[in-house]
Image (cartoon, rainbow, N blue to C red):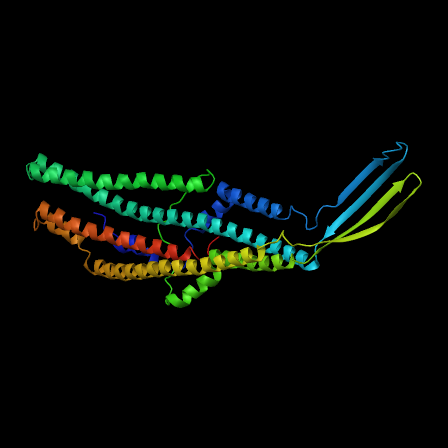
Length: 395
């Protein structure tokens, strides 16, 4: 009978060198994802739209031909060309706001891109868990099938009872069902991965997890998150835009300069020459500064709220990951020392245990192994949840 290689199946992640189990998948998604392609196109369109409006107002051209009321033969032709200019500080603020808005657009794309990466990593982690379970259940299925066939032969020669054969058969069917359900789940996960990869097939047979490590000190790690997190970066940048808008609205209270050329031509002569005027913003900019200041204050409050929400979320995830890591390692050590499935099989074959005793104790060991698999999987998911908030941690 083939011996169980328990350590290789469950804990190989600890013995491998640092590797990125998902890198090849992430590279493919980066190239093939229709979602990322749409996000990129949207970002480029928004940046083009950001520069679509001119900094200067449109010039105005006005012309008229006036005829005399008493003498229709008399007439006058008027021609006027005007160009309105803001003060230089207005143009400077508008230009800086455009650049900042483009940076906001880039960060918004980065946030959406990170979300796609996060989804890919989640699916890959679930697939690795599924592959590990499949390998384990394949061995369990071989063992259960061997037991069932052995009991059938014993039943035929009168060395086993119908009840014993029925128990072995039920155990075989139960293990086979677990195995087949993992196959179905694998197909579902591969389908989700294919969708994220733009409909292109991905062959994923990885059976070890990515070698992420849990931060030793949460507070210092969180400080790095605040500095690198794209959501915070976008909110900080948006606050810069809001502050620049305050400066813009204040600078727009300065009078606008109107420069032009005017010509009046009459039948007996005419006049022409440059013109200059000022537009005084007595009513058009009413309360704009207060509105811009209120928007800026709202943005700062939103940033602080987001920081508080994310801090609590990450702290809870970190504590959960730490607990899972501790329990997983303790369970691993116990199973390494006390894995007695082969001994159980040997005791049954020697007649020291009945089939029912063997199945009950084997089921206990089986559940313990699956629990370790599950803990390892949840721990890896928690690590990915933490990595999710770091800018460009993958790809």
